[in-house]
Every structure is written in C-alpha cells, then in structure tokens.
Length: 199
Image 1 (cartoon, rainbow, N blue to C red):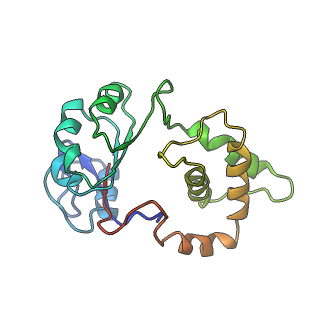
Image 2 (cartoon, rainbow, N blue to C red; image 1 turned 30 degrees about the horizontal axis):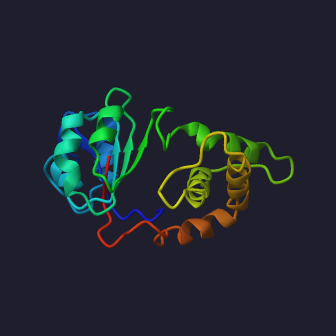
Image 3 (cartoon, one colour; image 1 turned 90 degrees about the horizontal axis):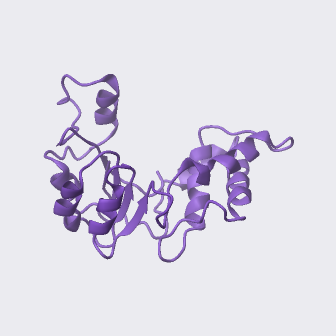
C-alpha cells in the first residue's frame, strides 16, 4: 500500500518476528503477524539497514545517530518523540527528508494536516461519507502537495482542506476498492527497489 513493500517494527530493542514474540501485549502479536515478511532479526541497526523510511515513536538520539547512516539514499525520517525529535533532527544524515512532531520545525507532522479535510468530506450533504479508505486518500492528497524538497504543506495552507476533502470524496464508496488496488503500485518519488521501512 502506498508504495511501501515491507514494514519492520522494533520494540524493546528487537525486531518483531511472527512466532517469536512472547510475553508481549496482543497488539505486539498482531504487529508481528502483519509485518516483517522477510523475517529480519536483530535490533534497530538491522531493521534500518537499507531502509527508505523510519518512523520513530520513542527512540533515543544516540540510537538514530548510530544507525541512520546505514539507510538507503535520501531516507525519510518521521520523528514523533517530543523528548528526542529535536536532537534526532540535528543528527540526521544531510540528505534525509526529516519530519517531526514539533510545530516550530519545518515539516511539522500532525493529524491537523488531514483531519479538517476528512471531516469536511464526511459532512458534505451531497457527496459525504468516509470509510476506511479516507486515510489513504488523505495521504495521497498530502503527498501531491509535498514540495520538491520533501516538505509537507503548512497547516494554514489554504489549499489543504479542499484538497484532502476532495480526495476523500473522490475515493469513497465503490471506487475505493479500485483505487486501493491502484495504490499498490509504486508512488512516484517513493523508491521500492529495496522497499523497507522501520517503525
């Protein structure tokens, strides 16, 4: 989906592998079952080796500094840990596209980018409605608005709500299945020759 061919999840310093997760919560078992089809084992370094993207929820700055340089060329780093995002962004490889949860940094990532447009689509009296495809449609709309430098639109960009709303309405209902099939093909700008990301 959305051009991502493989996802690895690292928890407590280890890559989750189906059938090898013990003593964890149910959601860990579900994540392990749905990810890591290549059955990669090891820690964050092994997970990020050759990866195109990394979504960090609670990692330490030293971890990222030590392993990010093993990622593929021009990696995308989405840093969502408020305690570490600043330090991690400063230590990211120079060619990386970096997005953070910090509103004072460029490429601010927050639900506010998509939520108003999704709500507008759901409340449309004529074409209203939003299903499971809404997040996919919103992601595609945001991707289309991303600059050549990999920067997301500003939350106050006047194009944002109309673009997301229209995307969700266009992709709703019966058309959603067909569009989801189309989305399994690579998205321009998202290399998939060695498609792997880590979270």
